[in-house]
Image (cartoon, rainbow, N blue to C red; front, side, top):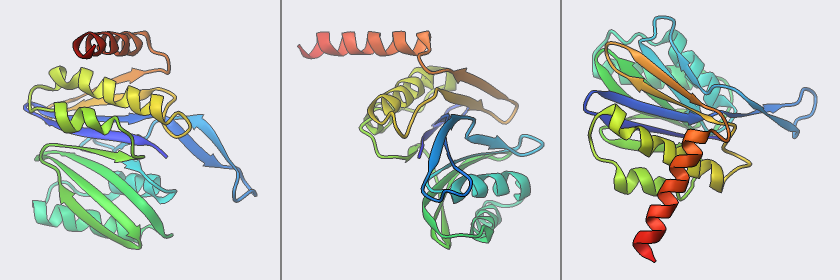
Length: 212
């Protein structure tokens, strides 16, 4: 499983994901091991960025979109092509969710696939995908459209609390990307990162003093 988020900013899109990857052990259908690895993939030219959450097919769908999707089309054709690529991946999906960022024109599409059928939705504010956690509260109630830099702490605290609440399914650090038409800036935070730990401590202290 995983936890991911995307937020629309005034100057780009903030994309974040944890790094806990579950790999099936060969020859043992119900046996998995947890390893650390990136869950955000980019096309060769960096114009399409994808993050997949859900079942085993989600990573394959994200990889296929990053490799095959042509961003130089209209929004309608873009969504149609994402749906077609998602449905071309073999196997039945169980609540697969793929966040797709196109840099030119800059937009954010959520691709959902259930069974063999995919659908798309344009995201114009913010969205969380993957496991359900109460950390959704942060983006749901505290997001407001501002610069990517000003949203960084909101992304950090949301991902950190998701890992704290669901450590068996979310964790091993996380990645945050600032995606703009001109460039992509990446930030990697290992598990137990001191900056994130300090932010969580400060947040808890201020919240406690406000409420109690």
